[in-house]
Length: 238
Image 1 (tube, rainbow, N blue to C red):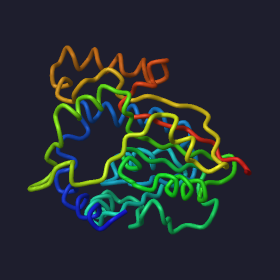
Image 2: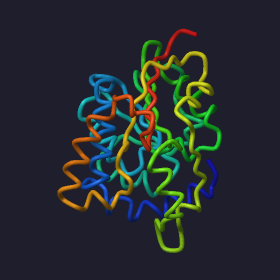
Image 3: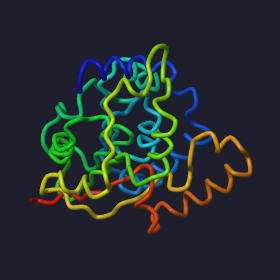
């Protein structure tokens, strides 16, 4: 990833947690953890693009060992303040030997990586045979995509908006097509199927109804329309 992306996330790090941990963002974090936790329990885990460590901290509570990488020094500093094991690195050039982890996961990160095949190849390289790679991509077949197109780029820091970072939207079947042969797709989950915009979770009645519905839809046939497609791969010997 470029120096431009690094600066974007450094600027973003200051206010990154302002809305996290509650409402819409808390629900998304919960749904992602519910998907990945069974693969993380008792495992050696690597999170790609760990940010300030909100998900990594939860992974560390169930994993044997949890490590995170991020390209932003600002994000890494906040993760270290949490006492987490993290390092500064790009997801397309991981500083680990082959077969170092049982699980490699990434949320809301690979959508901002221009070379998705290289990122998936690196994730596969550092995963042990029989282990899993769980990655999240942005889905254009979703209400979230429509809402983003209507609303336009939103501010993330002083003088910066979402337009200042590369963003890709991949149909759910694109990830498996560009993944290395050693990664076998075993499942797809959908996160944020019904939520049209984050602000509706500030309305108590809607928040409770949507949270219940979103949980039920993660593994339903409507998962293909989730704003976030979570792809679950198993590493084979191939």
